[in-house]
Amino acid sequence: MNKDTYRSMNTRLEVSRRDMLKAGSVVGVGLVLGSPVLWSCDQSQTDAPPSKPKTNIDDVTKVARTATSLPGPYPGKLVQVTDERAMVDGNPVGEVVQAMFDKGITNLTGKDLKESFGILFNKEDIVGIKVNPVGPGLINTKLEVVDAIIKWLEDSGLPRKNIIIWDRFDYMLADAGYKAKRFPGIEIVGLQTLDEAAASGESEDNSRWLDEDGKHLSAGNFDKDVYYWADVDCPQDNQYLNQHVFNGKESYFGNLVTKRLTKIINVPVFKNTGNGVSMATKNMGYGAICNTGRLHRPLFFDVCTEVLAFPVIRDKMVLNVLDGLRAQYDGGPMAAANFQYIYNTLFFSTDPIAMDMIGHQLMVEKRKSINVTVNEHPRFTEYLRYAERLGLGVADPAKIEHVVV
View 1: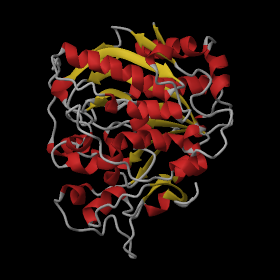
View 2 (view 1 turned 180 degrees about the horizontal axis):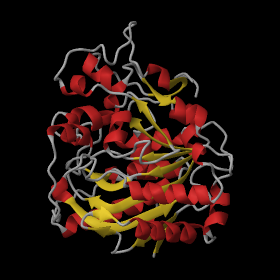
View 3 (view 1 turned 120 degrees about the vertical axis):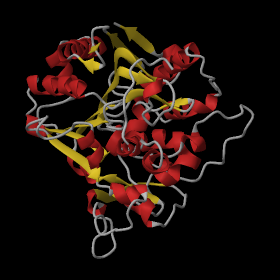
């Protein structure tokens, strides 16, 4: 593809400096997740948003939709399942989480578990479970939620070899507990590697992430034919290249997404990003592509919409399961233990736009209840209304069926 075509937390956790980098705090704020100061912090309601750079979204939206395109078979429907027994001493209870998951799926489809599988998948699919490993031990996608998903898929006839747990950064997956020993028979894939010492500025040795031709060792993991193009320049220094693999105007999709996976289950977590949320759309929008640091300031929320419009996401992402067992109401998208609380809740939808709109409303309610100043300017949800205009989901709260179990 080229640009012309196509505060209420009782749990206190000790976090090492290394964990803080991985969670996106301290130096990691500007590296792994981008700085919320740039894109979603409190801003005057009268401030005009920056002008939007040109992207290749118009070419992408010309591609014909398929039977599996977003928002899926249940547009505008969101199922919320809460069980106060789900977390004990800050840890998920596997059998309770499994029961919550089963209730969520069957209430979403109105069918039993195997019939539900048949609506969304077939037994030959290669299913990628996109987790959020940021903030290991704090706010990452819980392993028990992924266990429940795998059990459902496997009980429905999908071989374990057809299931892949994935995220953008390999080291984050490992730190969050996504390892082969924990998930035997399940492939675990990071789209790219990152030299942590170089990312933190502790080392100037680039030999661990550059090949002999001066290219990032992960460059071959990305599809040069499928990319999100945005007329935004980016830094040319090695620190940026280390994290982002490329430093041009193209953000390439991972080969895993474009060439291997036939279906995707998106498993984000319930947390804020400034006055917005970092839930379904951001987990995929910033997780499936590289070279994202340059996009934070001019396109932050729109990236969450436009990346989902690409057929490789739009036609494959058939289910979203939002992990709200532990939630975070402030300090996001980095992990911030003092702003976390036990929520004991999972959300289910084929429609990521409806999920994020309701998630945003619930987040605003929570922030107000803790007396956090909330800027309710519509700019923080405009990307969802934009997504509705692109046919990716339902953003109008009046049209969303919110089922609470």
